[in-house]
Every structure is written in C-alpha cells, then in structure tokens.
Image 1 (cartoon, rainbow, N blue to C red):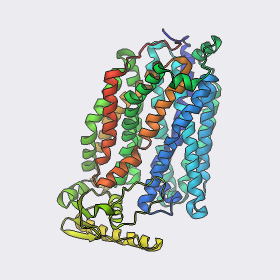
Image 2 (cartoon, rainbow, N blue to C red):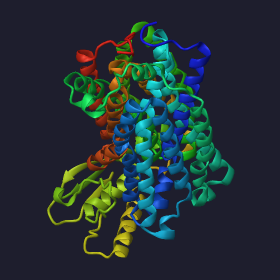
Image 3 (cartoon, helix red, strand yellow):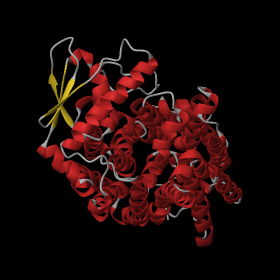
Image 4 (cartoon, helix red, strand yellow):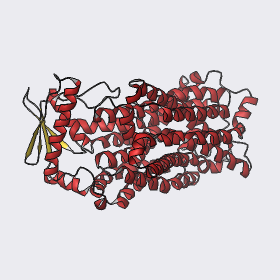
Amino acid sequence: MAGVGVERAADIRVVVAASAAGTAFEWYDFFVFVPLATIISRVFFTGLNESAAYVFALGSFAAGFAFRPLGALIFGRIGDRAGRKGAFLVTVIMMGAATFAIGLLPTYRQVGLVSPIVFIALRLIQGIALGGEWGGAAIFIAEHSPGGKRGQFTSWIGAAAAFGLGGALVVTLTARALVGEAAFAAWGWRIPFLASAVLVAVSVWFRLKLSESPVFRRMHAEGRRSRRPYADAFLDPANLRRVLLALFAIMVAQGTVWYTTFFYGQFFVEKVLKVAPETVNAIMIALVAISAPLYVLFGSLSDRIGRKLVMVGGMVLFTAALWPGFHLMTSAANPAMAAAQTRAPVTVIADPHDCSLQFDPVGKAQFRSSCDILKSALTNAGVSYRNLPGPSFQAAVARVGALTVTSLDGRPLTPAGLKAAQAQVRGKLQTALKAAGYPATAVARHADAPLILLVLVVLAVGATALYGPQAACLVELFPSRVRYTALSLPYHIGTGWVGGFLPATAYAMVTATGDSYFGLWYPTVGTLVSIVCAILFLPETRGRDLNV
C-alpha cells in the first residue's frame, strides 16, 4: 500500500475507534446547542424581544463557528510542529470544560448581562477547540491507514459527527420526557450540558491510549518538520492554491449542504412550520441514525471509484432536491398553513425607508419602526408575505386575505411602551391570521412525519456522499509537513463561517423578503460554486502517498 507504514488491523481499529469516539463527543458538546436554541434564547437573552432573542441565539451559535478558523491555526501549528496526538488531546479537554460550564451558568434574570456575555465567551472557547479537532482526527486516522482503505477509515469521522448530533438530540429528548416540558424549560435544559462531563472523561481516556502517527514519526526522524507552518502553508504558491481549492471546491459546499440538511432543516420545520419540538427531535434522531452508515458507505465507495466523482455526485443530488424538498416538507408538516397561504396570502404595505434588515447578531437593535414590528410578528408566526411599497410617514399595514392589520410606531416609546406595542400588534395579527385559517401551530395528527423524514433523508444522501470521502481527499491534497495547518483552515472557514452563519443569515433573508424559502438561495449558490470549482479544478487524490 502506498503512503504509510501500514498498521495491523487491530491497531487501526483502535485508532479509528478512539479518534471517532472523541470526535463524536466533541460534536455532541457543540451540537447540544441546536435542539435548545429556543430555550437558550429565553434563558440567556431575556432582555430582548422574542425575535431579537432568537436571532441573538442563532448569532451566538454562529459565533462559536466564527472562531473555529482561529482554533485551526493554533492547533494546526501545534500538530505540524509537535505532533498530531497532543494537539487533538487538548481540544477535547477544552471543549468538555466549556460545555460543562454552560450547564452551570446563571440565567439573565439572575445576573443580567453577565449571563449572555459569559455564555458567548464559552461558545467561543468551544469554537476554538473544535477548530483543532476535526483536522487532527482526520489526519491521525489517515496517516495510520492503508492507502486502499483510507476513504473507508476516515469516513468514520463523518459518522462520528452524526453520532455527536444524534447523542445531543437523544439526551435532550430523554431529559424532556423525564422531567416534563415546564421543568425542562426552567432547569432541565442544563442536563445535556452537564452530561458532557462523563463524555470528556471517556474521550481523554481513549485518546491517551493512542501513539503518534507513523507519518509524523517518520517526518520527525528525517528532519522534515516545517519550521514555519503558516508561511509554508499560505505563502508558498503551490500550497496556497491547494488551500483555495479545498475551500471553494469542497468546503463551501460542505458548509452549505451539511448544515442545511441537519441544522436549517430542523430550524425550518420547528420555527417556520411550527411542528412541536419533541416531534422535530424524533425526526432528527431518525435522520441521524439513517445517515450514520452512509458516511462509511460513500467513503468506501471513494476507495474504489475515486473521491471526486462521489463528492460531486452528492453536491448535485442535494442541489436538485433542495427546493422541491422544502416545499414538500411544508405540505407534509403543516398542510393547514400551506392551504391558508394559498387561500389568504399576506401582504405587507410599508414605506421601504421604514423597514430594517431584521438581522442583529449583537442583540442591540430593537426594531422599533411600524414596519419592523409588523414583519417581526409575521416572521415569528412562520407566515410568508409579500412586500408592497406604501406611502411615506404612514404606519405599515398587513393585509391577511380580506382583513387589515395596522402596525404601531415604537420609536418614540419607552422600553415598556415598546414591549406593549409589540404585544398589541402580535395580538391583532394573531386574530386576523386565525380568522383567515392560519394555524398557530402544526396539528400533530395532520403532520406527515415520515414524509418530512424522507425529504431530509434524500438531502442527507447528498450530504453524506460529500462528507464521507472528504477527510481522505483533504488529507491527500496536502503535503505532510503542513498538512494539519493547511487542511484545518479551509475546513473550518467552510464549516465555521459558511456553514455556521447559515441559520442566522438564512433567517435574516427570510425576514427581509417575507418569503419562507428565500433563505434556500444561500445553500444553492454556495453548492453551485463548489460544483463548478470541483469539476474544473479539483484533482483526483485517491492513492496518493501521504509521506510526501
């Protein structure tokens, strides 16, 4: 086999198990935020209105992703200079400690602004830790693997991410069932965060049993370690080209495809279509369980027919299924909503200069204008609307079928007055929507959960076809002396920035336009960019020597 001193079968299984288990636990720590986003928005951002609090919660989720490239640079340099093992042992300890601390944080009502500030700081620590995790695990497995099975073994990293997300969903759903919804909202949300203490202990124990990779040992013995990993990775023209190729041909699609399927899809079904959280959790658990073996299937397939063909095929499938799939989920999840939108469409008539972009990642905007108050109420109701320009200096109005709701201008009001005005507009709007046949929530007996799951499974096939061979392809793309640094940065820009900001950005796009599906342009454009770049420029990497 080309490329590495091949480990015995028993040894490589230990390497894969230890690396994948640690990665699963780290992804659990990071993903446990997802099913708790609505509760977190109330617990840590109580001082904001409902819309701003939820956007802020999504922004704090994205903030953790924003710092992942910094973690990639920090731990990439450590991994290329001091060794792969030490770098990704530290990351799991950082991640677990930050997650456990979130479970102990006092709420906004208890300590005020200290609560969201510390919460965001801990999310940033999580992001930095995760920035060093994935690259270390992928490289560690690949550098222990025989060349002919590199795709199969490294694909367990993708399955580990699925197990981490699935674990977060299972623990959350179990805790909800055991303590009840009221207690879970009050204090039970802490259980999934505190449970990470056990996972960290297991992860550290696993990783302490590993030895350094044979490729790094050989590189160290031959004196080929990089003295300047950053300069060698990003200033050398050949390596810089590889970094840009990894980013635009693979990772932009990875950020859009995977996070649309497993994150934005969940947000869309729960927040927009108003399906009960426990039902959404059950659907996502089933999705994760179905998708987990697909990573290994496609990773193994890439060992036989090549990485590029499998990954591009996954991108194309996802792009083709995205828009019809989300429309089908609307009909399946909330047919009454779909029927009401056809029968009594909503139109917002407002002075365009009175309307702001409903996106506030730092949580300072209050959206006081009559247009902003009205659009915020409609977005929180999960209702699509179209925009028409209205006369200047007049309050915004919403036409709900034959009914009209006039908004209020909150700019001259005190905070208490603004809150009362927002509540008044929401109340009038809810009355009009109910009269027009819009349901406040999805009716459980009318929702077709199996059909929702089927749509998400189709998208997941595309996501796993891209993710399964991805680790092997990225490891094979870069030379050994700068592999950790050069691989980790584009990976975490793609997943951390392109993927991490997807929920908040898509939500803002929907709010700005009134179209529940407008946020899908974000993953559509991103994936199309990667399809073109991959077809034109990405080389086939299968079978490359990793010692080079």
